Image (cartoon, rainbow, N blue to C red; front, side, top):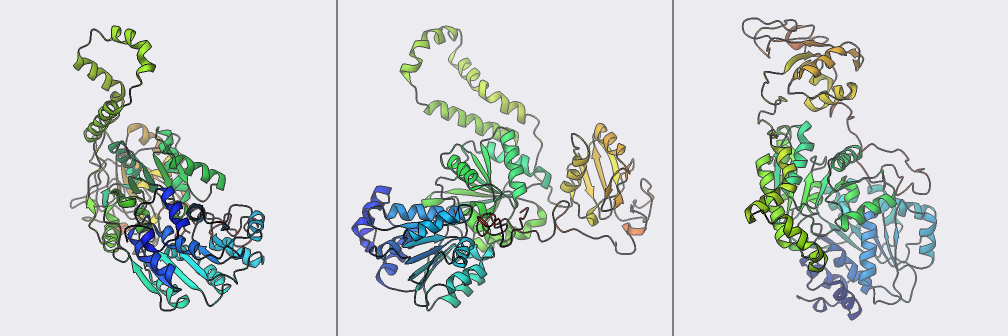
Length: 612
């Protein structure tokens, strides 16, 4: 069955597929379409993103519709509005020559009144997000009593986003006698539970191994300090001159921050997250699909439904909170049999997560070094020469100027001409990277950065790990206070205190604010520290003092205690500016319901908004 005709698809749909450029069905389509066309059955289909799942369920749905009736006969549920719109667009394309068939999208962030009107005008196939579908049911604006087929697309993602109750509400409003088709990239316990509860002896179709990533994706991780993540991201972008990437961040705030920094530094980048309006999201995606953007910085939820070909790299600025989401992220690249890279920026504290991801994906991840200046300049130079070699020469346009150009360049040899031409574009890379530091973190993972600098000024700060601070967040804290920020040349973060080395200017700035600010209600003290100090050895010395076997520095008590033995300070999980157990970004579809359930009710069903 190497043709769509061989799968039992009717002529109208085959004609539409041919017009779209579909030549040969994918493995998931070969397995699912004949079964779903020929029999009424429940189905569980496991396949990675980008394997053609929409056509696998969309074609049988279209072929089974009674176009003589305008009532809803099929329902497709998916996690986000982007995916909802993409599925609707695909189904409309597949049914181009199927007369009388109508597909309507129901999603948050758009007028529910207009969507109610579209449904009343007649639609045999409804594609919806869970939150908005529940709103439609509550308003009695839609009837699902005639639905004979329900598709749960990206079921694992819907459950991870907290839509389990909404799915129960929606499915209970459909007839008991129906076929349910569940499509998912992973078979989690929650997905298996849904299959067991709402499906009867489902057939199972699997492409590849369960929960496993695509074979043609190369998984790479870089060990880098938290504060060096953004410089490392720029190095990666420069090392791959033709990069066309999605950069995944954990929160909406971080997504916007990284995108803003990339734009400021001259990269073609933009952000996609749940705080954007639908019009803004559409504009960003239009630019990305047209390749006007080099890098799209997105949250997990906002990126669901992105169906863009030829993405070369997926960059995980953070490892996702739920490790199974990594499969969805990496599935954005290496589509349609092409190859791609999935890159992780991490540190040694997260090495266990890397090992867990290797088990989930079923692949060995490669540890590589952040590229240095020489490597990047070499890559950029070769890319530039290749572009020159392959550029289209428009003879008619430049002909009027050729005589003057040749006259100006007449005294240069071929070799000199090439050197000067290359230097025009290349000098800025040479200048930028000529003194580029090594961004690869030390394997100790102890929270120490860099080697000691003889020119650095060493300071003692009475803040440390017990305050929930690490190297990055401590520096960020002072950068927020001091105009122009500060930069640690070296930092050693202990439980109750820290030692940092900074420039003379930064040292003066830090000393000037000592005692003027409070952290968690305690005055922040900063003192110059001439001795080296360290842990262990002698105990209980005041700052700057040492004896014999080491300084064993403490703050107001022996062995680094605070408020009594064992350190009574409290710990804020996740560090400064990040609360414990923060919500995930749900892309406006559920978290703030400013998108899905609250689109026209002002978020009256759970209208809180998360910073994530």
